[in-house]
Length: 252
Length: 323
Image 1: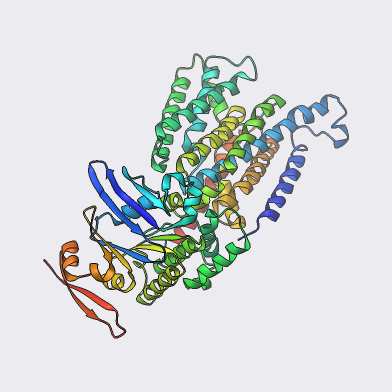
Image 2 (image 1 turned 60 degrees about the vertical axis):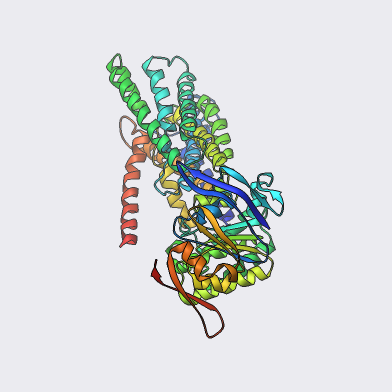
């Protein structure tokens, strides 16, 4: 379990995060929701040690994060950036292999992990293509494969569905579900409430750098709380196969 | 994953062949049988051509690897060790020694140049700050190179007599003419250490392909990486400028030439760029030496002349890809 306590981040004069407490349990999917600028990405970046919070503590499996070596931490936490960069004209398999940089040596298990990652993300057929020249959706699947190839114990994904077509969105959600079932702790920032309801075990609702509500998905994804978070009215219906559909229909 | 060992071995063999071949090239024809005879002609080989070839290979390797590391670090295919400000601050040091007439011993000018490079590196580290930020680093480099460039021009314009300013300008153009084993002794250890330091950057440079944030999440220590770059590139470039003046374009061009063969992953470009840089400088120096002119064409100028068409090619290639 990853726990964060009293996490605060200040950039210049503005308070980005204010005294956040929460956890990302193993084997579950925690969805982080909130309006633009609520601090969702900043929270993930703090946990992934990309930004150093001004105050607060982060624990990975009860160990304070500052006591964990960067290599070790990178092996435990895989971070999928929003609109991630690909800078050189490396091909897809080389790029996905970079996910194994966090592991100490190149072994058989690495090449298996790379193959698995390419297969799950439906990118095996792209493996010899130049990654930076792929379409946006293909690129984001390849970047997800990069994270999976490192076999992290926790995955932090910042809007992993943004560039995907609906079919691959559903595939990716199913992938996350499978990965969580293997015991990996997953935190995802999402904007789509229907997908959030479909995938989330736990939900963290953020607004203006504060966590306004957190808990089981069913308890948090109610019209009242959504209204309070986003300032929109929603209608909640159900799909034929029993998933919640949350549709915003007017601003307040 | 591409296996680049065969390519590296090929490049290494090619380098050895070209270095051996370069011993035959020059204004005076010395038959192979006389090379070790000990008479005057053999001195051309042992005291002039041999050190010259070795220096060419050393600085070519240092500049090539520095270029590859800089491009990987800044994730910009147009990055060059020059934008770092270290070569221009080394040049300023050398120019200062010429300006004040401290050229009595062969060690004085390189010493000044290395001093200049060291000050440049220290300034760079100070200005870039402790966050390991790429933008700060680039800005700091640009500030240092424009400041040292201006100071160099100032010294040229204030030169006590036309002879000194002529010497300075000529020196700035870079050349391997009349180098001795003393220059080898200066350049070899520094460039070797510099390249050794740069090899530690490979893994981090690869992770940077995915952007700064992702690299950090993968455990890359940006501050440490910045130090590796400053020290590694500083030693390679500082030592090169100290013994040969400013020789541009090697660091810029060579990584581009290598990528189609070894792949675009930054770590796999480092070693081939060092080998190819050495090949390029030694060959260009052979060309300069064998041109039928009264005064030798300066190597720095020859490199720039070769570099411009290369840029043109790159521009056309990029333009095709944009449309």
